[in-house]
Image 1 (cartoon, rainbow, N blue to C red):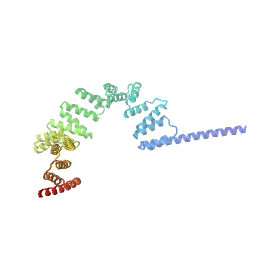
Image 2 (tube, rainbow, N blue to C red; image 1 turned 90 degrees about the vertical axis):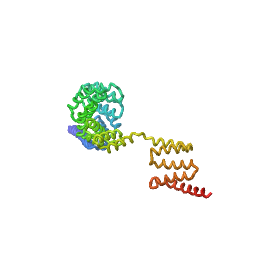
Image 3 (spheres, rainbow, N blue to C red; image 1 turned 180 degrees about the vertical axis):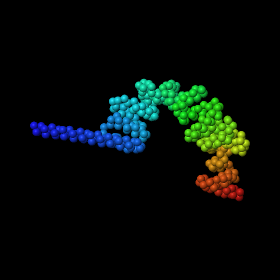
Image 4 (cartoon, helix red, strand yellow; image 1 turned 120 degrees about the vertical axis):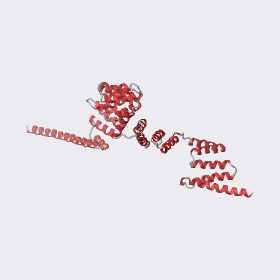
Length: 394
């Protein structure tokens, strides 16, 4: 009896020991996961992934955590793999995982796969507007006109769904359906008054109807929301010009030029505003700049034509076209240098050659970037002068 009791006690002891070991291992695993979670929260994604991978056999929860970390770290391929594994190994509804996976499929341009998954989600959850919206994005990417019906479904399901509201309003704006645009934007801004995209669409809607004072209010609203870009300033410049507020037009077209100082249209409108303000000097200067920018740049083509004639040893045409090129680009070092070479090859009179080389060397002798060619020209010029002296003695 005592032996049986002893064995029973030993068995219970071993059982307790095993349970303790299991509990300790489980506790260690939980502690490791908590540490990895903390690292994930502060952006140490690679370190978090390493710990997740070393906590034992990966289950749905760990696959999901690893997927999120890879996604946050920009490794979308591995994120997709782990989301797929998480979905395969879960016994419960995986809608959250499927949603994240569908987003990644879309982000990585796997549009057919994304479409299939979002279609399944939309069938399973027909009242979810975001699934309809993403189906719209996929169809729009494929240039499928049905995209707008999905955006409309999303907005019908939830009138506060801002992204679908923007899509529909933008579509109506392209069709110049101004009243529908305004109505939709009013609904969208009612739930989110600071929606930058909707405010921008409203400003454009007013500007296209030539309601410049209203448009100005909305563009200025964007500025108060810290939106500073070329389009806003150029649009304000346009609206102020049209509403006879020329000083403000000058201000905003000048700001637009800080983004693109090669835009001839901005200079033209600036000139117009300066003229209206009786600043004739500035107006003329801006008109001249606009003209210069509008002129087609043909200098490179002319240079290449001249060089083609040069390679054919058609020196007369090479010289003629290089001179035309130099009218377009009068400060071109390579143009003046090639012209001197053409003269040297074409004319027999050394004086004509000397004159062209002298013109070239005098023009560029102080340019440090041309010294190699200046030295070649100077050597040739010296020889030509010697030849001229010898010719004069005969």
